[in-house]
Length: 245
Image 1: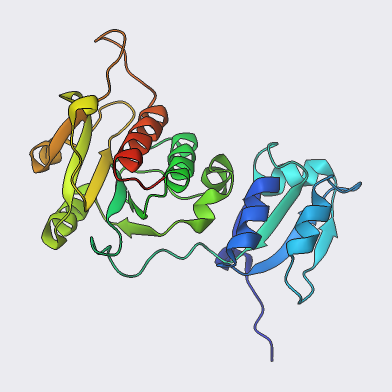
Image 2: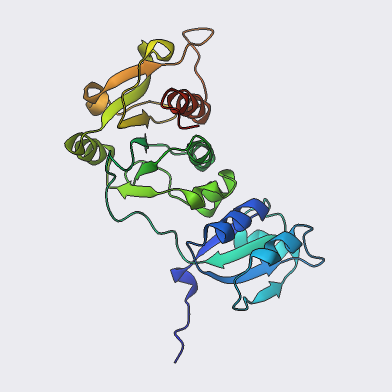
């Protein structure tokens, strides 16, 4: 007898690009699709990527999609899918020499934007923390334009736990702060981890001595970049230095 899939055992993905990237990645099962009628213009592209096994498509009013997705930013399509599968093994610096650690990033928009930048700069893996960090929700996937689907993401209990594991296996840590070494003068080591801190308070104080603090030059000392913007710039500079892109 076929086992019935319960809603609580599934996740939602909404928006054109997130659903397209989900289907391209082929990492998660697609259980059903909710859609407006007339169909979104991009439906023809999504349809070409659907698995051979038929997927139920349910046409519902736009207001119903608002309720299902808990947002109006769904572009007329929502998918119910298998929950995201986190990496089961911690990263190895030989196979994943360039990783990103997110320390207490609380805004899902920032989280999604950082994941998008990690993908674009060919980052080998991302570490997110349960304690103090935003969960990897449908909104975060949406803000990543679905590119988070292609990343290897490992989840840890806390940033202290993450740093302990990173140091144990041989990663060199670069911590983004407001008063570190000018990033333009840094010669990046291989087997490195970039650490981006909380939007308001920055890097957790207890780990500031665990690596080299680096800083982006800016117009005035009393202002700073948005966390996701800083992450994107630093990821690009590191990837360029390592010739990853």
